[in-house]
Image 1 (cartoon, rainbow, N blue to C red):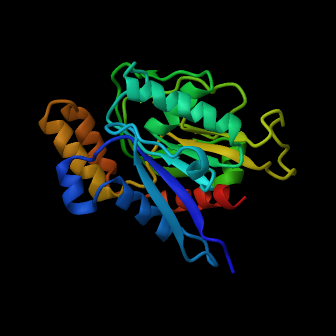
Image 2 (image 1 turned 30 degrees about the horizontal axis):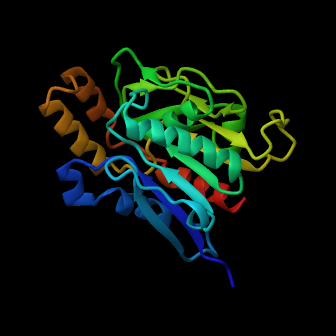
Length: 263
């Protein structure tokens, strides 16, 4: 009998009301991604949510040791801000990665940026340039081996980015707007990048700048709200609408996330 995988979702924000109304809050959105991408032979998992932004709650001690993996969500906040909850999250991630290497860690958008900070990297504003809606990511050789394709299409919603790859991480892909579209850290961080004919080492940490959990409907609601509030300019919105209904490889990315958890 297969053991049920136990996951912790670190929730870093609350979606806008229109998204909550039509798609649910982040736990429901991520549950949907994970269930639709769950590999054959694995029929269930358990996922507990922790509000790290407003409640600053975390799994600790013996409770933390029950988890197989941690997922850090996106957020409208900027990962470079000095807010107490952000600094606590950075420190917590660094501590868990160091002292509990058995637990896999996945970072999505803001989570990707937090992980970069936790390992000596940085997150900065991308000169106010938005990257929004379905975007093609050109994959590195390692990224192509992990995702099984030369490119992936993924939903984007950010104007901050990680400008370089922190030490011990390996780049997965790039776009013209954001060079670092994702990265991995192996369980043995001293292992060099494997040759093309060598097995991929066990992955400890996987990050993505894009949002595999976002659907077209979710992204359209966010675009409308940010355009109406003046946060997102009309040119960016028009460009996003032109790609909003493109192929979304979120489910493929979800399968890779599961492969990391099961590796």
